[in-house]
Length: 147
Image 1 (cartoon, rainbow, N blue to C red):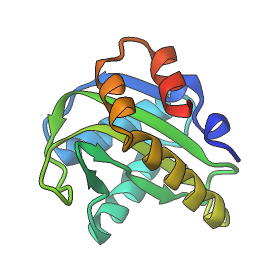
Image 2: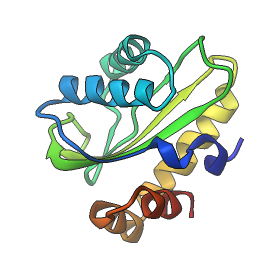
Image 3: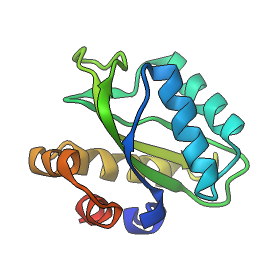
C-alpha cells in the first residue's frame, strides 16, 4: 500500500490544540474516530502503549506515533498540524507541532515499516515541514505530504 492510499485527504487535521502529550493523543484519537477510523478508546490505548516503549518524537518538531490495531483491515495514516507545539519527550527535547500517525493491522508489519519510513522521510524534509507548518488547507497539506 502506498502513502497516497493510506493517507486520505480527510485524514489531515490542521490547527489541532492540546496542552500536553496525553491530551494530544486523546484529541488525535477523537478526530480519527470522527473521520471514520477505529474507536478513540482503542487508538488512545494503542498509541499510549507505544509511547511507553519510548517517545515517537523524532526531532525538529516532528513525531510519528504508530501502533498496530487488530481491528483494522488495512493501514490508516493521518497528518496532524498543531496550532502550538506540545512537549512530546522528543529525542532532541523540542516540542512537537507536526505528527504523522500510522495505524496498521498486526499482520501488515512490512507495510507498517514502509509507510512509517515514507511518512517520516517526507516530514523530515525541511522544505516540506516548513510548508506544512504554514499550510491553510487540508488539500494543500495532503498534497505536500504525499508529494
